[in-house]
Image 1 (tube, rainbow, N blue to C red):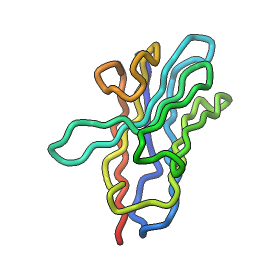
Image 2 (cartoon, rainbow, N blue to C red):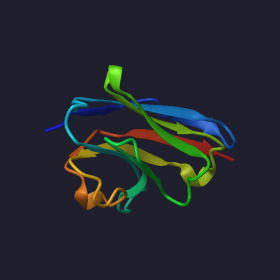
Image 3 (cartoon, rainbow, N blue to C red):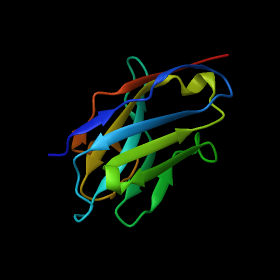
Image 4 (tube, one colour):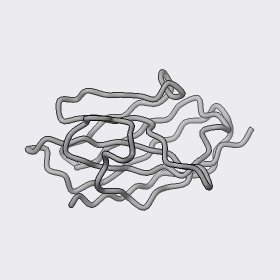
Amino acid sequence: QVQLVESGGGSVHAGASLILPCVHSSTSSAPYCLGWFLQLPRKEREGVASLDSAMSTTYADSVKGRFTIYPDNARNTLYLQMTSLKPEDTAMYYCAATFFCAAPLTREYYLDWGQGTQVTVSS
């Protein structure tokens, strides 16, 4: 089981940037898939971005060119850099882990989840 702890959320204005760190217990020596998801109230979690152990990334169309997922393996931390934020990016953001990125943005394939961090973007 991988432990994950997100942070970095907050309230910002449209156009601002945020970086969300996710500290995890996954060891870089094993295959892994790490992802970021967002969730709106009463909605299912949606994939935002993923990163596998080969450093391949996948992004949802809505965030391509604005969000970047990247690791700091020395710190066992996964980051989601969010730029040009829009009010529609407002959501709870979750970090997740699984063994293989068979379906990188599909929540059912992820085994372990963090507690989430709230991002609110005002216009």
